[in-house]
Length: 199
Image (tube, rainbow, N blue to C red; front, side):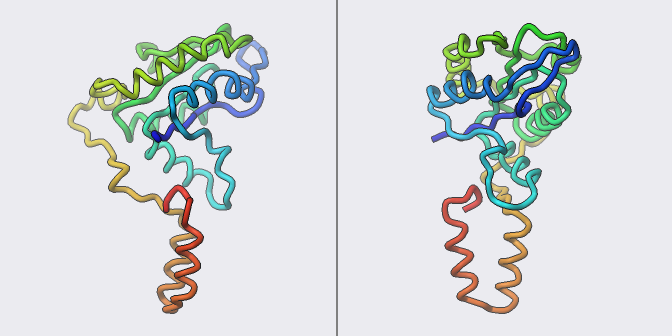
């Protein structure tokens, strides 16, 4: 099943006019049901429950995702940082969504990008539209939706099949086990890796 990663604010955030927006509700009523209906697995870094550096997981999920959904409703530095990483690593399959009404206007660098508008007070009203957009994006043969790859057409895209992002703490533990030639320790580590993102 194709994997999705969701870039969005967490919890309640306030726009530039002081309006409170509940992004957990938006995820529950709009994003999660649309992902499920489009037959996509995945979510946010909030689903990562093991220890370690969250940025390491976030970078890996952004790179490896078959499709990214990014909510640009409010001016959130983390959202724009993660979106920039996706645009720099992968050519295709980044879907932008934006809630209305809000006083946070789209930044200049994203003004020409397509995005799905949803009503902040009734996000579920656009569930079918988002599902259709996700499905169409997965099937699209468009060469790129990344502004970076549009402007620098010779740039090479990162190939997630050739890049295995294994958490640093796990790599260090494997290295210690190899150095001490502890076969039992290595077997235990091989059992621990089963079912994890980097299996």
